[in-house]
Amino acid sequence: MKTLVSTFIGFISVSFIAALQAAPVADVAEYFDRHFEQQLAEHQIPGGVYAVIEGNQIVRVRGFGVRARGSTDQVDPFTVFRIASVSKTFAAGLAAGLAAVLAEQGYFNWDDPVVNYVPDFSFRSARYNQALQVEHLLAQTTGVIPNAYDNMIEANVLPERILPHFRQLDPMCTPGECYGYQNVLFSLIEPIVQQTTQKDYATLMQELIFDPLQMPTASVGMDPFMATENKAMPHVRARGGWYQSTVVPSYYRFAPAAGVNASAMDLSHWVMAQLGHYPDVMPEHLLATITDKRVRTVRDLRRGHWRQFIRDAHYALGWRVYQFGDEELVYHGGWVRGFRADVAYSRDRQVGLVILLNAESNIVSELSTYFWSRVFDAIHLAEADQLTELLTTEED
Image 1 (spheres, rainbow, N blue to C red):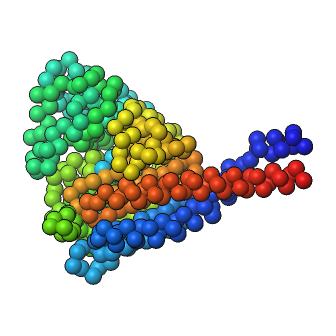
Image 2: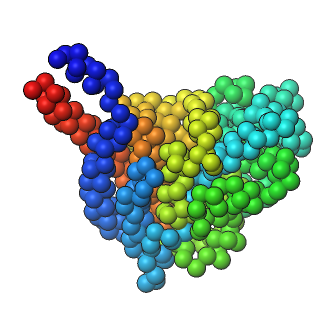
Image 3: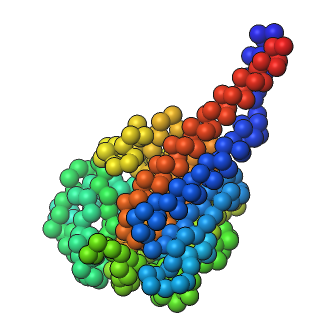
């Protein structure tokens, strides 16, 4: 009998594990729906939306509140938000796909020096120039002091006027050896892919990502966002409340870092692609490339609501990879003036979460950790209970 039980355990199928998870995810999504609504009401957030994904299905998606304070237009699953730095995940996916194709033609390799494509770029000490590789941009391992010249982005300075300022800097470490989060340098992937394909970044994203992944309301840039009727407007806190702000072009000029607009429905399909359900667009080798851990991000271990759950943290290519208790969670957040976004998924558990808010509120972190802590606990309990029941039946 022990042999029979051991054999049974050893050959538990993936479909069986998936079946165990189905009810827990749906149950947690129901509780999360109420919690999401309560949190938005308590913090007086004008509007928000979430989506829970399991496998290639949307388990639950729901919008709350209004697109703009003082308006009666409701947020719904198709309302478009700025997703800020979640845009980096798209840049990595696009670049990895292009690299796989273009490398076969003899150019655009991950280890190519950036100056091969952006000859005007230079550090203070030119000896570092050849050391900065394409991969370092998307892995946040340029070696440069974190958030270099973000203040100039926020001052609405044009990219071509910011880039020469790097001639005043040298890396803190050899590129590839230490973590330093960037927006300006990250966005140098745009001229690289444009030069190698002779197509602009927004067109490439539309043709290679948005269209094949069935993301009809996703776009790149400020003009498409402003032209969208069903869009959320930004809100900032002032005098004890949330007030509508204006949309400014600053970070939009750095499209790979923060220039994508999308709805919860769009991002649900993006998550499905990360879970492996669009293999023609995001094949397994590409997913492995962009989630391969490049560098530890120790500072993430001290992040507000996350720190009680995270045991380790890394940056991959455009994605963060967290050790959330015993589970691996792939994640990225976004924050630009008036908007917050969180997107995360567990490849092993085939579960994903999208959160979009039209206010600069830190409750996005509370909401994300609330969901993930409970969904992992629910899955673990379901597995333990049902496995115990099945093993008991076999022994009888």
